[in-house]
Image 1: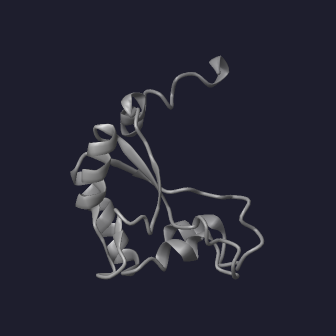
Image 2: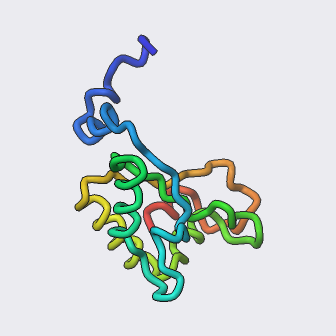
Length: 127
């Protein structure tokens, strides 16, 4: 809105959002993103498929909680750190996607209050 000014629009780290037109949402176990036999992420295969289907992507929302949250007491942050290979594999996946000039986003669900309490959201995000 006008009262908020354009501060967010002029932040250098957010400039990419102004021309990021193609952003799929992907489950962490998408068969193009994750190989269940090898138990590893396959960003090359994922991006190759998206290049064939859409001509490429600008960013991707990786969704580790969907469709799992609520089946037990794990919270949204637990689902992020329990992907196969853990945080190291996830960090490598993000680095590979960014190296291909794809921005990576993760969902944040502040309404996730019915699952395991692991500290404040800020504390868990910092972990």
